[in-house]
Image 1: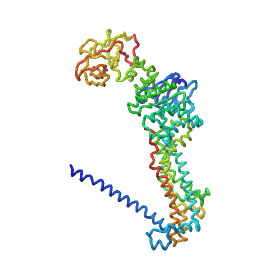
Image 2 (image 1 turned 30 degrees about the horizontal axis):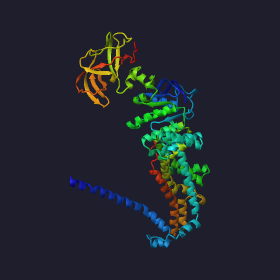
Image 3 (image 1 turned 180 degrees about the vertical axis):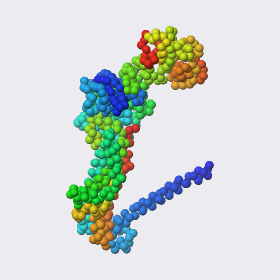
Image 4 (image 1 turned 45 degrees about the horizontal axis):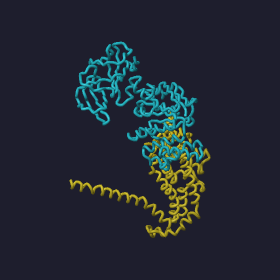
Length: 356
Length: 282
């Protein structure tokens, strides 16, 4: 096991800069998830840690060692790929033995390690099968088994669940998390799915356009997003945003409604600001109540456990999630009341306004 | 409604039936000369003309015994095996390596190299037989099996590179990344991961080149004079001159000549069908 330190990493393909100076510190045994929309450079960063991409500038350390010029096989890492990349002409056991064989491990050692990994993943009855004879979830497990047998210092996962169906994805999510809790191996995991990031990570690195937007524990990112991008990216359904102007008593919306702020922002009156509130932090009250956002119901989506109400208000559609069953109908006028101390304020540059 | 379904139903059946008939007839037309060749190999010349379609007595192997015992046929046969085998091995080894390089290692010269090889597909080497003759003479390769091996390899490489590059490109690059992380060196990746997967296109490249090389008459005719370096097609013609009247022996020789390539085809045709990449990626 080892910590991983990423210092001022840059990557360009020709004149195109993909990663523009990234710093991340990953502690020993930590489960870190790189998350961001496609094209944000998260997979490239992971491939640089793996040694599959050259580093244009900066430094990557695994443990105390700078690995910039160390080939992948000498980095003591294991990687699980999105497509699993199982060797189609080898059985499950041979797939798992390949790296051990190349390392020159004895037959007995190979057998023991494969047995151990296979039994922990429930692969024992499948050892003689070929990848084409396995289901998606089983292939996924073999790919993980291939990584486990090497007993590496760092596990790298590149969107390992995106080829699975929704139900299996949830199940594998739990399995990977359990695996990490058992092995306690440092893990770097790439995904574009923020639910995966929220549920699995010790620490989330939100990337966007080649830079790190915010690093933090999942709930820290959820409760205190550093900027509009993180606020909008983390959380599903996404956070609602309303643009307005700061006034003495709160935030004045273009329609004239005044939203009270529970903290006095360190911004001057008249400054433009964006007000953010999560769907579950909006209460639906009678239309016309003071200090609420006037809106009309557009769509009601009951999911059973809660109900998502999409309303038309100024600035477009807003989403409200309510725990109780509601008897709202489309085009009903309502008022939306943000819950106290659950709102976010961003300045005109999209940065979170420090709590006053 | 009922009349429609009734009239629509028999049509596909009759069409399939027609297709079956055409295919059966085609197989018959294709197999007929082969069968006549094999049958005639077991008959004397007299029998061939008396009962051309009759089943022969398969215990009468004197034609084969004479062809193998009294002529240079065994030498021709061995030469053909050596020349075809060596050419195919060279074509596959060089073609696969070149195809892998063209398919995987990104560089500016890649496209140029591929186009260079493809240019070879456009150019019939028979057009260049005179400069080729002079070149081989200067290299002291004329009148040896090497003259044929190098020529056939040059002819076969473009298509092999084309087939292999196209196939290797279709293999997921993540397979190589996985092998790289597992600790495999580049030659090892080629040998342990890519080559086992590349067996179907290699079989295609092998058969597609082996048949014309085995049957080639032109280059041996131009390059080879010594009897001991002759290959089967050329050998069989000299043989025809000496034994014009003995059709039985000629057919026995032809049967022997046709056997290896037919067996090779049967052995490798399984590889065509095998879908090796199933399960590589989802």
